[in-house]
Image (cartoon, rainbow, N blue to C red; front, side):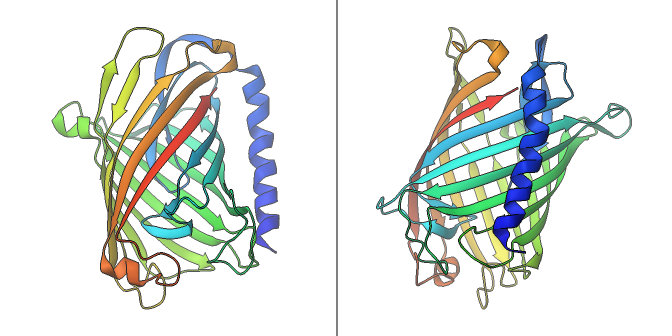
Length: 307
């Protein structure tokens, strides 16, 4: 089966379970956190004031380039084209998940798609604006009082290629204790492809995401975050003979809720981020025909909604 058919089925599944819950969602007072996963296997939280056990999340965005875990992903930094991103997921809070060593369990089903402003795809067999379509399922929860944990399955595919999707399993652990270390929100992530177009090597990363409130009052409070990630692939994760390769990414982001949108339409926010990616010689050598830049600047702007 071509990857296009896989992704078409995934889109129908996610949209089918998302829209009914989005339509009936009702506000329910004070906010609380829900633990969830992302396409690439990270564990995170979002706030909701709704009592429903199912939550819908959507996003649309624009980015100056696309580098996946430090590796060139069909759109480079030269600004001859830009990336349009979309995301759609449903998070189910599992019943009877507030007792024992693992609490707050949730199941996330989602998809993420990238479109380029130009239809030229030099790293793929064919050209096309829609060059990336991924879908995933993740289980996340709180481990004891100070940790989050998640397990995520993701299928990465290229709609313009006949290659099978790359299937990957990832585990992530994030420390959220109420101390200085917890304020940095350190996360350890391990991921490994196991089938499909690529099944070699494994990936590991460590990240920090300190944040501060720039303004707490008013209709548009601003939150600043300073994400830092160091990661690498081992045993030819980035391709044949790539060996071990590494990167570091540093950025700053600002986000604010759109309080002018009535709560019955969900919680809307906008996020802007600028960053810089530094890649070592081994990672650059793994893709000399496409992009061998050592330093790659980037900028993104994203509109998000949560029900």
